[in-house]
Length: 146
Image (tube, rainbow, N blue to C red):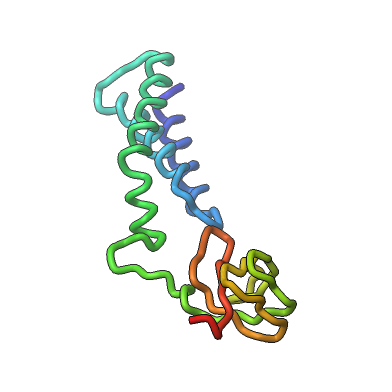
């Protein structure tokens, strides 16, 4: 692939990542690897097509392994001193939820699955306190169980 095609591909992938609703930063590093491969020829390092693809794959893996998790944590809330503000919040329970049972609740304008991790049933109309967030699942207990 010509050097300019690598650069265009790299910039396009990085741009797509920025347009993504929930960026996970995979395309950033694939795009960065393509961009770096494209910059090799203008600075005097010429490689054949097979060598370009092998270098691209290796560089992509190295960049993802070394930098992706750190960047993701830094930009998405895993930085030192970050605390999840949902823990400790209250949500309204619309139907009875037995211990270990689940229900749908609304929080911050969207629907979540809430699982009762407490020892008692949470009656409809009561509030539950969020104790833990596991992906898209809220683990809750009765507000009375503190």
